[in-house]
View (cartoon, rainbow, N blue to C red):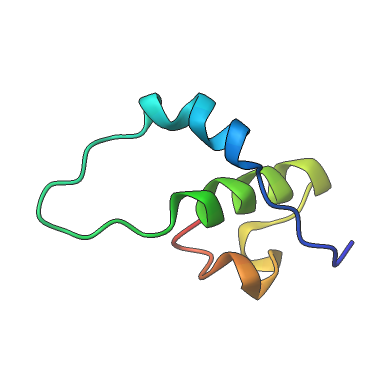
Length: 60
């Protein structure tokens, strides 16, 4: 379960129009955040149990 999954470039391009616009605050890496969300949901984990590769649990 420790294998990290990443969305492909094609998958990111497909969902990118639905991301909110950034105003003032620099955005975090959308690919890392969305991949982290998919990993947590797929494996039925708590947010704080996600691998560190996806960033802080509050960011995911």
